[in-house]
Length: 209
Image 1 (cartoon, helix red, strand yellow):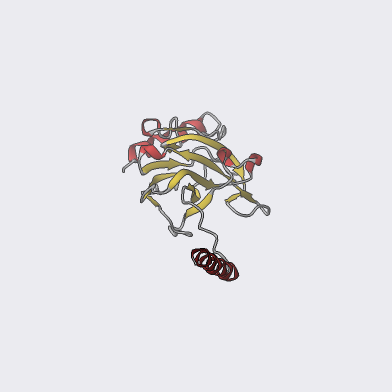
Image 2: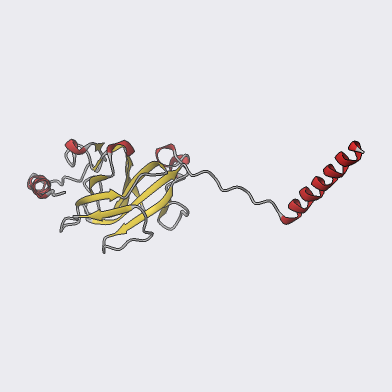
């Protein structure tokens, strides 16, 4: 996907805002929507909900020291979910860690926008794209029925100078429909079950005699 026209328009919006003595990022309120609404009315497409900038770095396990656990935000987790698992994370240097189903491409030279894609939504029940830039991160609930590609922009994020910062990292969190693995039966339990089976067979033989 190419977005040179949109990138130019976004840069123009920043320039106009600076002329009138402000910045386009001062409001820093996230927006969600589909492809037709991208960057003017939607920071990520296709997204069905969003949470505006939260200070710190996102994580699915730990909290504290400027780290925010996405599963405990607001007491119930982002978008009311407390079972988010980090599937993939893209860093601004182009590396992934961990590397999952997410891929990022066509990142603009100012690091303000780009494309995202996933290899498949198979087994995924919900997905959340988190954009980290400047002082915090914004979160977007993805529409799994809208396909496996989209675009993103950091328009909803600000830094200390109230400017729109370039991307630091992009995280994909998912929830899964995979059933839990069966609990293994201890060896002692298997021996007991075997002994009970032998006793049952012996009792049946006695009744038949």
